Length: 340
Image 1 (cartoon, rainbow, N blue to C red):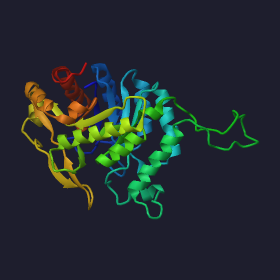
Image 2: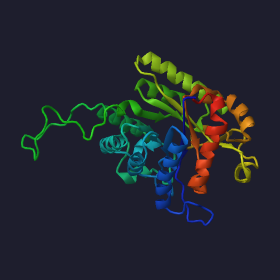
Image 3: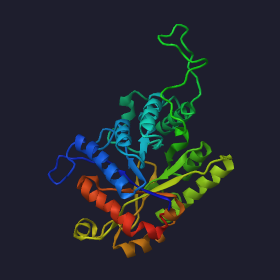
Image 4: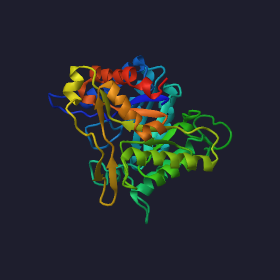
């Protein structure tokens, strides 16, 4: 395990039980948690994007702010739903955020999962081409994004421009060198993991995937990672790919931890349907004393296969407690898993 970061969905609710009661709270606390995580020595601050929900939505202002407030930590998404995105406008936003962060952006994208609104991408002005699905549309948007992030010119210059142009066709600006190699695909199936490898994207695998064999979640996820790496090698890419997995992990080191997470809970995988056709398997959560937690995680085949672990955090419990959650893993658990 080379890198450990956190993943926040940025939930907020006006409930008095929540430490995060508004969208402003969610955004500002996300920045504060990223700063705290960097100070603790964590490697990454990642954020989930959902639309029509009391969660984080528009990622690039947040990523830019985190980039300006930190110096070392990777900043990223896991993931942005590409069905909702204009890939050219997104390339400009991503380039700006990456330049502000000094080349630390790790941009996770995917074809998306069910959202709060039926076919919400239609309200954003998008619809699949004839004979195509919304998933096809999301993957097509991703392919366009990858193309323009190469930095090649494609726009025909105006012969009478307002400002002088460089010679040749024009590319999108601002352009950030190297960002194309820091795009990740959130794959729920083995087939889309293989597709991502062929296109030269890193792989993000979350706490759910398509149930393709009926085996335990971590076993299926490890097989997905191996299929991805085989496809990467077959595609002839010259750089080493990166792979992240997400987990809900809580080390019980004080009374607060035991109060919140010590009563047991989701200690087994579960099965559900993310749409009418797709049977999915949801991975278990981990909550135990550090020594027991280490032994449990050593049995997780996908954690062993990945190079990056993203810890999902209960952001509504506040920045101070979430920093404690991250620190407990880094201090008491991560070294035994080979981190640093």
